[in-house]
Length: 392
Image (cartoon, rainbow, N blue to C red; front, side, top):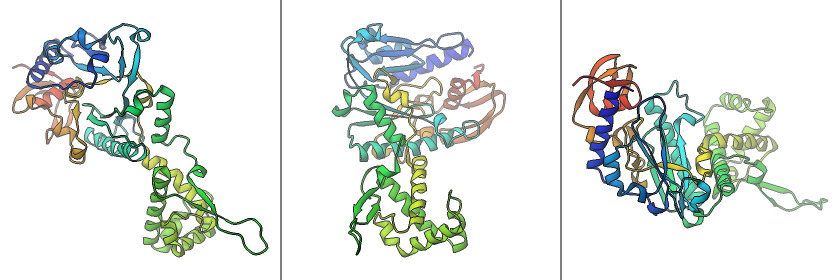
């Protein structure tokens, strides 16, 4: 990044902070703070191990330093400004979840557009929130667009603040479906013996209320409904795509599904041995479809630094935006996280990497060379290393 570009971005970030009120996190004085300034040369320089007392008034600090990135710690400490972690005196920590589009298994960063990546990440966010609210019952949640390629969720329920890394890893494993065991999801009950048998038969069901078993049950029911809506040849072909299910088992499973649809909807997956074998493989697919692919190190690290909501992301020029839960469905990061400070002006940039830009409700393509674009698009291109500041 050229010095002229760096100076321009630093100045405009300062203009943003002068016009924007920043709400600090709870217990801000107990947290470690860090930031990355607009320094010259390759790489970045992280300034950390600062307390809010070291920084001074937060809004005045941001207006004065105009940082490229700014962070606070998930952890709370007795002395957050001490330079070594062992001496800070850890007290508690928020439970933080990070979803990054680059790490989603269904997203190819080389092929997907920025908008497509963010849309996929938002879908994963909705699944994560279902786990946190429905399965764990967490209530004190803050949802944040990271300003880059994903979302953060801050959980501050009293029950999680004292959890150590191992306990947090168990939560990670649950929402990612790691180690999910089919047999553990299935409930068995005796349904009575038959004449001449002393041992009662066992009925195997997927509980329909709560947790992974309910997700697995919904998946099985949805598959069955799609199967029964297809013609017989197509249904049989689809069934035979599963390992170990040939023509005979496919026919048996299909007829069992037709005869026992109501039972399957009630949770019974033991309507026929062939159907039970199918159900086991369907449940295995649930992990891929319903899990939340969070970044494990972020959640398990009780000292993690996370972006400050309301600040600007130095790699995009977008706002690290809090999102009220009621507004999540309609939230579009490429529109709603564009700073108003950068709206209504045009600037000239020297584009070094041409290509599509989708931002602020606009979609256009920039070519390499000098180009006049809306300022928010110019800031985005410069922050991402796709352009340098052009002449005034």
